[in-house]
Length: 268
View 1 (cartoon, rainbow, N blue to C red):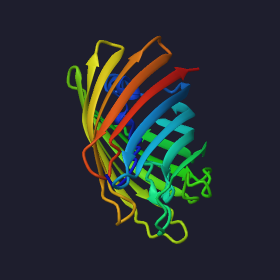
View 2 (cartoon, rainbow, N blue to C red):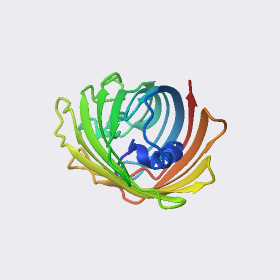
View 3 (cartoon, rainbow, N blue to C red):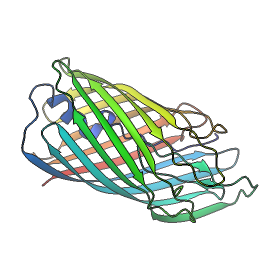
C-alpha cells in the first residue's frame, strides 16, 4: 500500500463520545461549565510501497471544556514511529496526513519519537430541534519536530460540520471537514475534504457501539485518497469516567492497514 495514516477527529464518530451525542437529543445544553481530562493510545500499521512498512504509536493527552452550546479542547500527542526515511508523520489538526518528506530515493527505516503537533478545537451546537447539529473549527499548531519528520512545521486550519438524530436505540450520524494545509518548503500540497458516516447503537444508558465509514482526500496529488471502516465501543465506568476501544481497517491502498486505540475520559 502507498500511504497514509489517517486520523480523523470528527467527534460524532468517536465511540468514547457516542453516548454524549445521543443524550443531547433529549435535553438542552446546560449553562454549567464542565471540564474533562482525556487520554488515549493508538497504534497503526501500513506501508508506503512494496516492502516499505511503517508502524506508529501515539499517546494523546488533553483537556476539554463545555459550557452551554459551546465546547473546546486542546490535545498534544507523543509519537513513536518506525517508517521509511522519506516519510513525514504529520499528526494533528482535523486529520493527520503523512506527506512524502523528500524526492530522494532513500528507503531506509528510521525510528523516531517525540512530541507531535498541538491540536486546538472548538464546536458550537446549533439551536435546532429534532436533530443534533454542530459546527466546529480547529487549528494545528506545529509543535512537532520538522527535522525528525514528525510534522510539517506549518499551521493547518480546519472547519467541520456534524449532524445526528436519535431514533430509538440507533443514532445515525454524518460529518464533513475541510482542512487548509500549511505548505512546507519544497512541497506542493492541496487543501483536503474529508467525511464520515455511520451509526451509534445505544446499549442501555451507559454504553454504545459505533460503526462508520470514513474518507479523506490526500494532501498530495502523488498519494491516493484514504478510505476505512471503523468500529468502536464506549461505556461509562462511573458518572464521570468513560472508556472506549476502537479500531479501523483500511479499504484503499492509501489507508493504514489496521489501527487500534484505547481512550479514557474523566470529568473534573
